[in-house]
Image (tube, rainbow, N blue to C red; front, side, top):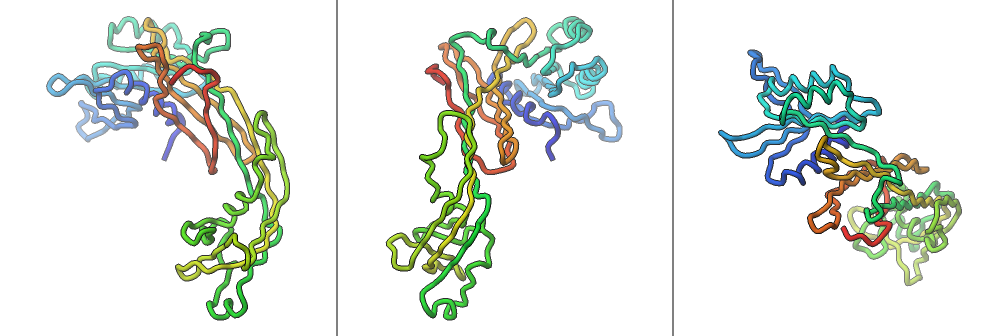
Length: 316
């Protein structure tokens, strides 16, 4: 079961993997507490293992994904894990600036503790040559089937014992070619003329449409019965809704004290009519000056079709 902050922990893991490509990196790991006589363990957000035994170095990464600063008690808990599990280093990651008391403690540790802040960049702080992303989202929803009338050739219904409406509308029980299975909702979506939809600006459109398959038409429709496709006719009316959105993605720099930006995180959250969808893209800068997209973290409770496109020509 996921917990708050899991997405950011995954992003941090991806970024740290790009920084230390030869290291073994694991997320949400329980390490044994060395002084425990009953086998107790300590949960660690991320564990980085560099080198090999007997010269292996263990680095713990603790992540706080909140709109509040890391307090001193939380930091002391993280700091205590270093000795508890026998680690050598600790990386603390937060969306908010660390308090001066924590910065002082970290600076007194030498190279033992590192502080990393995800600093959201305002437009005036983003370099002109920096890559920009736009989240482009489109979704066609079949809101309701108003009427549906399936039919077969005379005598076929009794012969096959066919009951066309025994499946749900989203069941893959239909086909247009006798090979690939579709749901009735898929077929309805395919009948909506997407060229009429908005494509350059945010918009929401509702409408009605219909589809018709006759037994004599060249365009055929099949229904799956007892594992076989049977040709069927169909008249159907349905209501649909189409939503389109283009949203610039915000960007935060992954900055370590005294080392500046090590990576960047592009993010967007879009409250669509179908529900919330969020996207996170970690990016690093290569030695040749170009930028590299490391991965993408997408969270949605519904099927989606969208693109994340560069807003300029800077190569990725």
